[in-house]
Every structure is written in C-alpha cells, then in structure tokens.
Amino acid sequence: MKSLQQYRIPYTGLKLGVHNFHFDVDDAFFNEFEYSLVKNGKLKVDLIFEKQETLLIMQFHISGEIKFSCDVCLANYPSEVNIKERQIAKFTNDENLEDDTEEIIVLTKNDHEIDVSTLIYEYINLAVPYISRCEDEGNTKWCDKEMIAKLESLSGQKEEQKDNADPRWEALKNIKK
Image 1 (tube, helix red, strand yellow):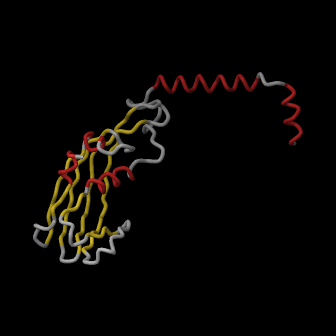
Image 2 (cartoon, rainbow, N blue to C red):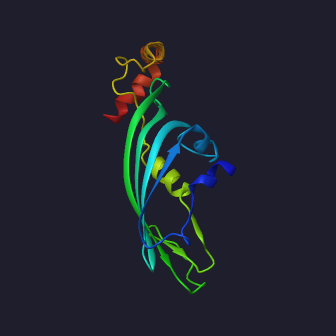
Image 3 (cartoon, helix red, strand yellow):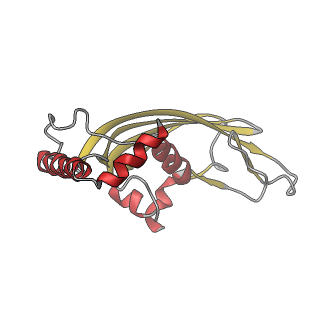
C-alpha cells in the first residue's frame, strides 16, 4: 500500500478554488488490488480538484491503454481507454452522517486528506467490457490463430460424435414432434 501514497490529496492546506493533479497508473498500481480485473496497463489520470467551502468536486479524466485477455483465443491485446467521471465529497460536522453514497463521499472534520486511488481503480475496472474479444478474431495481429484453429477442430469432433449417436435416442426425439 506504500505505492498508493501518491494518490492521497491533503485538502486541508489547499486554498479555495481549482487545483490540477496528474497521476500515472501502471502495473504496480493494479498489483495493489488483489482481485483486479485489469492486471496490466499504462494510463494517465488528470484530476481537476475544486475545493469549495462545503464540498470538493473532483473531475477525473483517465486515458491510456490497458491489456485484456481475449475470451475467445486467450491472447493478450491492448485496448484504448478514455474515461471521464465526476465525484463530489461533502464536509460535515455530524460524525453520525458518515454514509457514503455512489454520488457523494462524506468527509468529517477529523479527515484531512482524501485517497483517490480507490476511485481511480473503480473507474478503470468499470470500463472493462463484460466480454472481451480481439477486434476481429483470427484476422488481427493480436489474435492467437493457433488457438482459433484448435477450437475449430475440437468443435468438429463434437459434430462427428452427434452423427454416431445411438439410434434408440433418435426414436425418442421423434416423440416430441
């Protein structure tokens, strides 16, 4: 967690107004999170940090390249990422109101810095597609053509096994009709 220290912003010493922060995100960042969907990548984070009297407004712009594993051929391929998100942090004097929501983070009077590493991590992982595939399977420089050929040959064996099915099962299939 020592490598995540750079993502802590001490806001108590900042003047009211807009401040800019820049962070680099690489493999060491993703290694800090045990169950990260992304393991490799090189990203830049530009954070516009606006401090007001009662709240903080953080606007994130994350851009760069992360590497996915194709669900079809298992090859690693890079993908461009361009993420824009906004997060609000509100100051409160009531220590009982420490319930963060998706839209608003609640900061008490005892807090003096905000850790944006978890926000950056969540934004990047939310950008990961549910099903990751090479751009054009079998035709790109990233796709593993040997794996595609192996999958096609294995799928052909299953069709042959269906043709050699027991004739008693064929009679049962006619009952449905």
